[in-house]
Image (cartoon, rainbow, N blue to C red; front, side):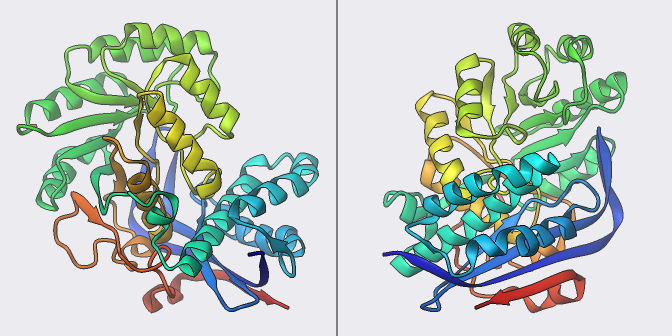
Length: 380
């Protein structure tokens, strides 16, 4: 049954934080998010989230892209499905993105709109998004604690352990000697069954990455994430993979089904991590997740944003199955916590999906309204 969109609401948010979130390539001075709601002519609706962490001014820019560069392609338009919306918007915005060179922002907006449209479709069908994608989808997904600064890792891992996590990922790529020393100390404190991973956020060229791998060869790391830039030559990735005793991970900066097919075919990755809010939404990431699983690789969705994107990632992981883990940023973020993804449960090592239709989100939490920095409601 065709879906004719009659209303789009988009809001950008920014939350001040007392402790900036540092990565090897930059520091987040606040926590942003962009949430989008679509509604059809029958009153059915769905929610999505658009990636907005970078650049620093990205949240409001992406929200305005929805209003000023997408609304004319959406309002009053009929789509057969979320996939149809994804394909039409990708095609119709190609020249717009080419003209300004802003491929990322356009892809991210389309991803958020696709998530909202999939939520709408599942809600109309009366099932959760996970069961909409896969009727045999799991009801729970295991989680790991992410966003842990290497300098504060001892404290943050201890706090995360108390919250029920048994897998942790720390950010490296700042100082190779110090990072290696701290990782050595951290692995010595792990308890039975616990996992420690490292994320370099594309910090190194091949020589530095090789030195890191050599220094950490004897450490039981679960994976090493983005030790090289995502666009580094394949020969560099292959050389590093040949030397690395721990699996290499990446994917948050890969886009397109072709891009992921190429990544799978290289054989260098043990873990692949598409981000539902950066590219693809469900229409792109669901077939990619299936391809990752079919290749015998580990699918662990990347996510470091607000509550809608985290819940959407959980539904996608539940539908895909396998031994993947849901990434959970343990730094304070009211734009995530206000949605209460664990629905009051103290143990955050496992997330149980709601049985409610769609993503289980009917409206935005009232307490985040104070953080809105831009909002528009468009309708016909």
